[in-house]
Image 1 (cartoon, protein in one colour):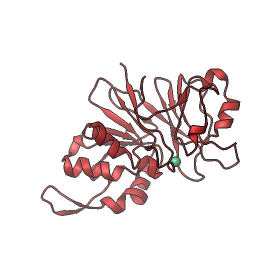
Image 2 (cartoon, helix red, strand yellow):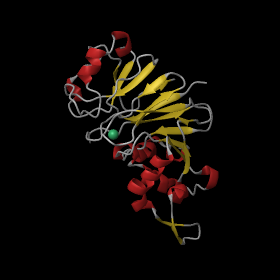
Image 3 (cartoon, rainbow, N blue to C red):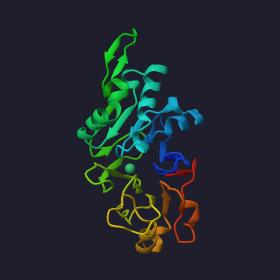
Length: 249
Ligand SMILES: [Zn+2]
């Protein structure tokens, strides 16, 4: 079954001229899965008229440009759209520890003081707003399964890339090289020469170390300031991801 991948944004966390790097997956079934939900994502979903269609969110790591929209999205679905029970959106994370950290260190302050259907105050938790599924593979009905792959981003910070069972790879934020055997690669990038403690993959290292056949199936995303000065097609890449670009997977 065909799956549509729609890019909601293509920017790095520090490029405020672009929306956050995120996409959604939609198949023929009822599920619409976000991959990450940064601080610009709820407004993008609203603009596209699909905020109320979100059923699943896959989380790769806890930077705000990847999870900073979850408070707004969770609140909109719980309070404005009255989602409850099995209608709550499902969060997919690789481990229980990451789900706990997401609540304790990112979402709790803004969401803990909730209210119930009678408008009585409650001590809300992550599961007030979201269903939570943890494990090494995110399985969503009608969409390609996504395997969480531990990769290097910020030292000591849990971080994952995704490999879909249709052989599509998405680095999210990672300094590691992508797997060359994937059929389609979406890779984050920075635009400085390689250095020891980089947190994204250097454009130049990707250009110089990836075979031409791999570059040709690699789209670059998570674009920082100055990306306009580069011509990825001339360097053999598939190109830069553009906002609202779609792929059929
Ligand atoms: Zn990050």
